[in-house]
Length: 91
Image (cartoon, rainbow, N blue to C red):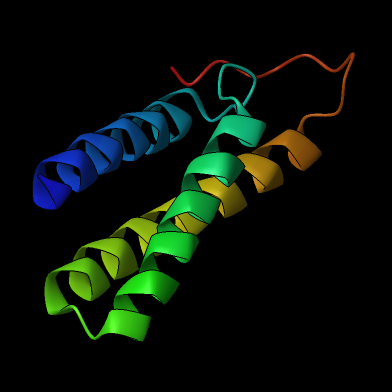
């Protein structure tokens, strides 16, 4: 069940990251949601390390890494496009 839940979470993060790259804008991405999801991976990773459960460690390490990359990209894109500025077309 843990693997299925992690795959679903990773799919959500991958979709968010994909839309970030395509639009070159983070306006449609919920940064608090990504932060909460990434924090959940960090908590489960700590728990997996604490009980020495390799599947938890592997899946949540990947989830944490993907979440951090997505969060970092979204924050950088938001800083690049300050409110009120026009967002350039990706075409």
